[in-house]
Length: 416
Image (cartoon, rainbow, N blue to C red; front, side, top):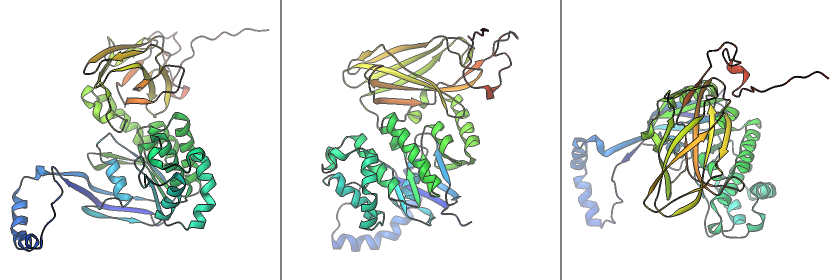
């Protein structure tokens, strides 16, 4: 079967500190042409540290109808690879063969004109994708219903919130039937209900035989949606194969994570006015816990502006990337501008089965009851292991991972 995407020796190089060239006169252009050979010789002699390869020597093939997850830490080159595949930027080396129409959702508002209304941008995006007006009109009602922006359809999108932007952009990209759908981590901007809705739509797209490339830090979603996974590290392909194997290997690496890796593990796109600076597991056994032991984390948070009514959210994941439990603190805290605060988060009486886990943390405004938007989010640390109790009479002494990630210790059976 001929691949729908073929990438060979792909590379993208950037020049560090390069600035835009000023406008040149005809005289400057002629003089520059004469000096060009000498400049080329000089540039070869310059230190190679002035350049940076965001993507280098990347090669792979994807068959029609495949759903491929692209995973890796922040700065690994995932977004650059998607921009190359979407023809947004030109490669420095290598080539890309795409055999089908591409629809991409890479950043909030990509492809939207801020002065045009939501209605006008739907038709604009469709035209960019090569759709006829009749095709767009046929899908129009489905797009609007999915995006849930009927009330603001004739409002310029510059007045939309980031969530509205993402809802409309994803609806357009998914409903206008591209043969190849490319989705970056922008779904993290939306709320949990919309993320679930988008994952369902991507699953529908895949079942229709179309090809999906999906970048996400949500390993559970990658495991659920993708048949294969491509791991990118330092701009190169590190692993490419069955999703479960690649995800397990990738998450195992997080056991080596330290506080210095927070920047790479941050899932929020832009560092805002508040952020985690340190996350540690507080345990006498280091990264190993006994079954039933209270899990304690030490969190350090700093803020650039005064912030209050903040809460901490946390989730625990197994090595398949599936969330096995979450919480949002009822207690709230505040941080003054330019200050840091250290917090101790205790999770008592956990019934996590023996095995390996990692955690995510978020800072949000609002409490346990209402909607909460992440101001900063870290996923992937600290990783830890839960050990079985040695007593053979304990139900976890010979625990089988296939039995699940949570142990129900209290059960009572009676006859009637």
